[in-house]
Image (cartoon, one colour):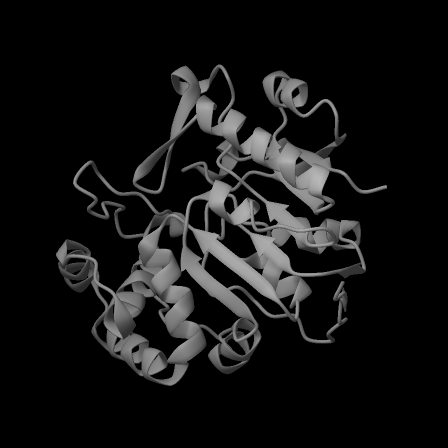
Length: 276
């Protein structure tokens, strides 16, 4: 079995997206939880890819059901230079009227679609991705005006993503690819049995309690095949019950999604692993 060693890099890569539930806090505080050696890295709920950019694995499978998100990663990997130029054009034109005009344009693929996606992510309210029932992005403009950031290093991001197969896929299909010694990092929507009648919106789709059970079953199968599993999830009794056969640990973090700063506070997440 091919195994890889984590390379410790002096300069960390900064994710190019801000994402609800992103794991920058996790790698900053708990990066030592990941195994030192593994085969492929597989992430079925990609989001901001903070863990992938932290580990920088030599082989990876990165998937998500959000087509716009997957397009952005593919373009960063394959066409980072023209993407940077397209973002510079958005930066030059950005204002209130321009934001809402871009928001009203239909999502598309390719370089223009990736630039639109990243532009809206960086200038909308709190980096939130939300669409209505027609699949239209509907987050209002936020307070940030920078489209190009000092932390941007698209060339290095592109180089790191060259190691990855990137595609739109259901989480179950991705998890089924995990073999003995592969590392699965799983960060699903935090649906519990009792919230929102057992479902929450995930991108433009519903992630239900039934999906949580389907995810649990896929994780159990991957564990039986010998995959290494690190999962973050809601720290709730219903989740603790369905993952009772795994190693469970509570992790504290600061919540940053509340609209008012003084409404933000410390919350807990559940860490689920099969590591020793």
